Figure 1: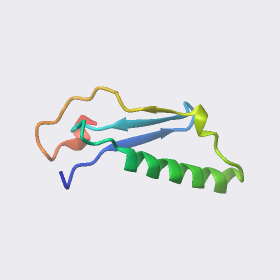
Figure 2: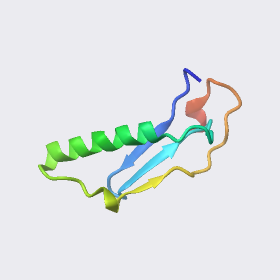
Figure 3: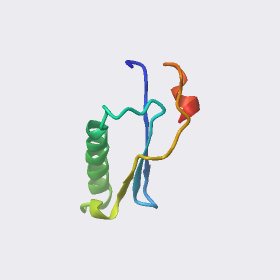
Figure 4: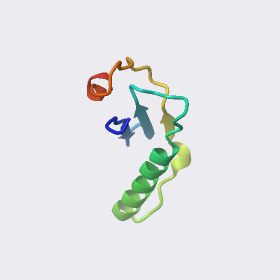
Length: 79
């Protein structure tokens, strides 16, 4: 789906990366997106605090149930 989008939330206080996708597919591991978010988080943290973030303390949440969409245009309503 060329126009579909997903939502990643970076929850600093809870130390969590949260993924929402209303067209979840077992074919898509989201690894490329997860890795990109991690790199951005690491860079921003280092630029802000001049130290490295401890990602071992963070959790990745991707199994939050969302109502599946039945078309290719209503991503935002379902996430």
